[in-house]
Each structure stands twice: as structure tokens, then as C-alpha cells.
Length: 365
Image 1 (tube, rainbow, N blue to C red):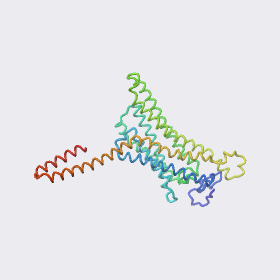
Image 2: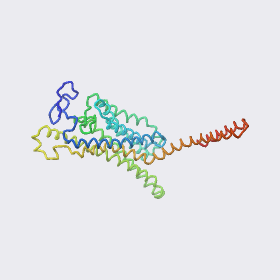
Image 3: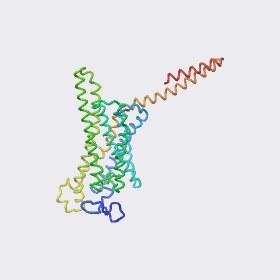
Image 4: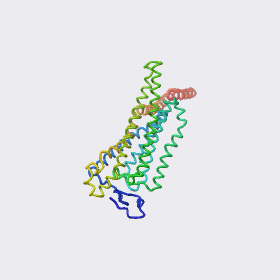
């Protein structure tokens, strides 16, 4: 443990570890061995890189063909963009970049949770309230206002209260590692609220879809429900891909905030070790590895869910457009050169050039 003795230190009289005031956790978690810490670096780095690649592919696909992603599915793009920055935060090291890392991981992590709520809301409006794409898109400015303003206020509050601290396991700057109150107020409570609201919207949307499916079956038979069932499968798939990791992260945080005082007290007072069972003396290493995996896997799954279906088409269309533009220009050049060499009538040549420009323009467009 590290003693905070200077009154100028931001954690002075604000941190307590194992019931000992001004006692803080070191940069490296004292509960894990050197081999476990080395594997942690590899584990977090691996999933951060995979998350970055997947979300980068998603964002690049969106930039190539923005019209392909309309509401109610467009929030998935912004959710993936948030996880792109979260993965960059996990890959960024250095004490000089502490505030930057905190903003990358915390701000965009909370923004991704709000985009998940917005995604659930837009799906509910489309499925349950029968809203069209244009009607939902009309409220996009309010979606962006909520998704970026709320995390901004929370991030500013954390910075103003000097509550940014170091994660001794992941090696990043975050909040709630030295104070359980900050962990519960700035991390755990918002995640629980976002997960609950988003799940309620999804359940309401599912109920509406099942009702519509029943009506369609009664009126037109089962063949007309194919597209609706496909939408329900996609919606259910992404629900599992997000809600399960989010619920696991919340469960891991509950486990940590419930047991951390016991771990710290046992570490600081060896006399308590004989009174605690072996599994209660130190945190479960697998739980922490599961938490970091689930924090990043949503970016991977959301990216795969989007770009496996649309990336190939979007990139193929972009490549074909470039090829058509190149081949059209080459064809025009060859034909004009041929006309220059074979025709002795400049007015006719000019007329053919104008006609060729118009025809090629219509063909390529």
C-alpha cells in the first residue's frame, strides 16, 4: 500500500484502504502475482486491438455509405464509434496522458451506454409506435444532445472533484478505484440505470412485434411474417450481444464493491487472514479478467453485427464506382484519339465529342 502523507496530494484525507485513512492502492494490484499481471497486459491488449479493428471497420463502412444506415439502426454506428475510442484508451499508456485516458475510457464508455438506450428507444418507436425512419430521424439532434451532454457533465464532475485515480489491474486512469463511493456513484449506478431503461424499451418493442406477428398470421398466413420474424431475430441477437456483457460488467462491479473492503482489510492486517476463508482473502482473478473482456466485447460484437452484412456491399460499390470512373475516362480518351486520327472534319469531331461526353455521363451516372 501507498501512504498519502502530503497535504497537497489530491487524495489526502479523501482515501481510505482497509479502514486506514490516507492509505492508497499502489499502481500495481497487490493481490495478484507478477505472472497474473503480465497476463493481464496481454489479455486487455488483445481484446482492445480486436475491438479497435472491428469498430474501425464499422465506422469506415458508415463513412463510405452513410445512407445505408438509417434509423432505427443508426445508433449502432455511434455506439461502435464510442467503443473505438474506448479501445484507444485501453491501448494508451503513460502518466502524462492520465486525463486523456480517463476521458477516452469513461466519457465514451458512458456515451456508448446512452447510445444503447437510444437504440432501444428507436427500435421501440419503430416496432411498437409504428414510427417511420424520417419521423425518428427528426429527433436525432435530441439523441445526440443526450448521448454527449450527460457523459460530459459526469466527466466534468469527476475532474472537478479530483476523483480520477489509477486502475491497479488494467493500468489505466479511471474513477472508483480508490473510493467505493465514487465507484457506486459515477460507474455502477449509471450503468444499472442505463441497462434497466434500455431493457424496458426492448421488452416493450418485443411485445409489440409479437402482437403484430399474431395479427399478420391471422390475416395473411405465415408466409407474410418472414420479414418481421427476420427483424425479431436481428433484434433479439443484438439484445443478447449487448445486454449479456453489460449485465456481466454490472455483476462484476457489484462483486468488487461488496468485497473490496474485506480484501483490503485482510491485506493490511495479517491477523485477519486466519479468520477468512481462502477465497475471501483476495479477489478472484478470473472475475476481473471477465470484466475487462466484457467491457470490450460489445464493441467487437456490434461491429461484426453491422459490417458482416453491409461492409462487403458498401466497399464493393465504392470500388466499382472508382473502376467505372477510371474505365470511362480511358474509353473516352481512346475514342477521341481515334476520331482525331481518322476524321478530317473538325465540326463533326466536336459534335461527336459532345455527344460522347453526354452519353458517357449518363452511362456512368
